[in-house]
Length: 155
Image (cartoon, rainbow, N blue to C red; front, side):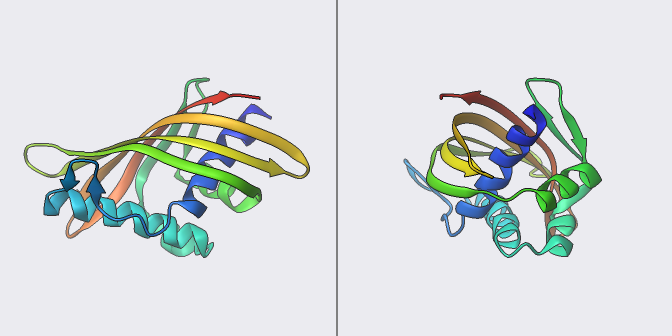
């Protein structure tokens, strides 16, 4: 059940973080960081459409998803979990979004926090998360290679 909650929280974020622009509270981010943010937004848009082929393409072959409870999903397991989950979202708030790049701009990571209120098959969830998503440059494309989610159930 814990795996289901964790996966559901991440999947929920993929369906509601559509259309965010590449700005921070301090103003526009540099163009390389903006391209990473666009990659993340593209992933979210594919998830909103449930376009599993595009989602698979956004994930690096060595993609892994981690939680504080030592749950680890590889690319295939993560895709399976996304395809199996469905939820109703009542509240979603994304905050503290920050894009960082390695000096050679081959790796990037995005950190953010989420507050989510939802229900899955009649069960209510109210959670907050702190997440880090890592991207690796693959030719001209950014691919998600790592996601870590710390999830705390509020009620």
